Amino acid sequence: MSIFLTDFARTRLFPRQPRGNTIQDCTPGQFEQYLNAHAPLAVLDGYASFCKLHVHRNWTSTRCLTVPVTAGNRHLLRSAYEARSRDELPVLVRWFEGVQPPVADYLVVILYDRDQLAREGTPIDADWGVVGCLYTMAPEEIPMAPVTMMRNALGVGEGGSGVPLDREAYRRSVAFWEANANWRP
Image (cartoon, rainbow, N blue to C red):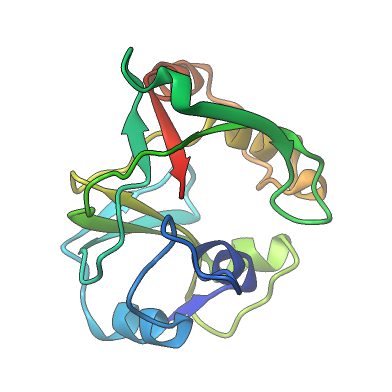
């Protein structure tokens, strides 16, 4: 099985200007090489048949992706309308500023199969393409953000995957994201 780091994931996980809330201590090439050379601790089913999650022990100093919202840090939450790329419409996002989460115990790599990536306009030669990565304390997936679920339901033309909205999964996502938020340095 071969794994390729897509441009979409590369710009989000390894931005030109490195940030403290992205993958640390390796280059995009080293990251891709590691994924191809090391078997995951676990392979989890993703939200659709074309999606798998490879769980790896964190071999970097990458910090957790999310922080619990508490009465003591709620005042540090910020929000804005942002797009993930020039082709996508901006959506409302929120994040913490001024917090530093612990180093993650696991990197949960989100993979799409070759056929799905071709449907989305990203043909690859590998079997799987990295589309994202979660940095977590537990060897499991955190719920996809509600806005990502909606974007997926809108289809490929709007930056999604074309997978219909699962109302129960959406409710679980809302419950998680009401109690947690991403962070920025």
